Image (cartoon, rainbow, N blue to C red; front, top):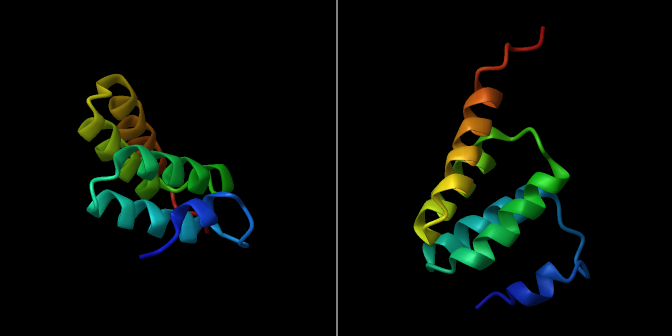
Length: 86
């Protein structure tokens, strides 16, 4: 089993994708609050990732945090609708 507490302390050099993947793994285990922490850390490092907001919204929904879920879904939608850079 992966030691998520170790990874969350910052003693390992984690990137946004690492925290995103951690959030996915935690979600699959039903560890919703821990998944929120991982996704929020991913967003701290990469605040413009619509997929992370979408996943965070689903986790909030599982926790019964409807307002937070809606806000995350709206942010994901706004970021996804952004025009592509040329």
